Length: 432
Image (cartoon, rainbow, N blue to C red):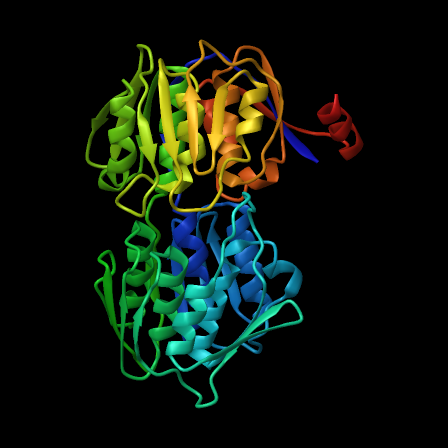
């Protein structure tokens, strides 16, 4: 069992290179199943969710060749099964994208009920099912698997209105429709950068998708997708996490390999809090020397403030002057991490979807637990800013979405290390 040991209270200085976007990679890799040929994917992040996704494809018959740590070639011309490995699929939430890709190309898919992070709220896939059904598929749940199939061999284009703005449903339906017969129009779509990235990937392989990044996407189905090369966009949330880290600790870092426009929703709030941000072509210089100021945050679909940054920004606000309000409007509940911050001295009260954050002078190191990916990032930020030593367990969640987080933070001057401990010892530390 791995945990992180952090000696906090040190400002961060230096440069950090941002990896490829996790939320794009975990959709683009399943989308490679639709390509009848070799596709080369560049700027892939080295994270456990990506490793798991590639293993799932291999079990289905894909041939995968690693060119370098961030580039792979995937050949899905000889897929021999449309039923995914149960144990692998249930370990990641993004396994549901396999339904759209397999259904789109082969007219059938059997995918284990998705797993991944559980941060307390219900994460339904009813909008995914609504879209697949509109395209002519039947969807049933049997023996822990979601089974989708069409009796006519090929899906048929349709008009689909999403009842709620859903990133996952937008991407999944887009994949399924890419090879459907005729025109599909999806309305009330999500607009996140990784949706545009998936559409660009599919288009580079021969799809005909227009409107990604707006609330209406039109897809003219094609008979076949062929090979090509595509580079994944930088990770907006990883960049935001390092920006939040320097906001909490103080110091100055240069965040490299980013698309600054994708960061506007995060940058604006940090500036409100007294953080200085200088924008350049593909970098941001982030500096915090004075006191942090209170602000209010409400998570919204893009281009609003991202729900995946809510825990990290709450950790920062726990050190701001005054009282801040954080409202979670995307997921039903995402505040399990608050009790961990409270162990460190944070003054946070949660009422339904709103957290009232009364800033404190400092946090104090403590044994804390990561319960999901972004909550784990919040724990790391709090530990970096805290006085004394913190021990963070549950770090397997953090490594689902952050490449080389220990090395990157060490390069910024953080005193953080990863250690292996016996599970029994970890439990006794937690209880103690």
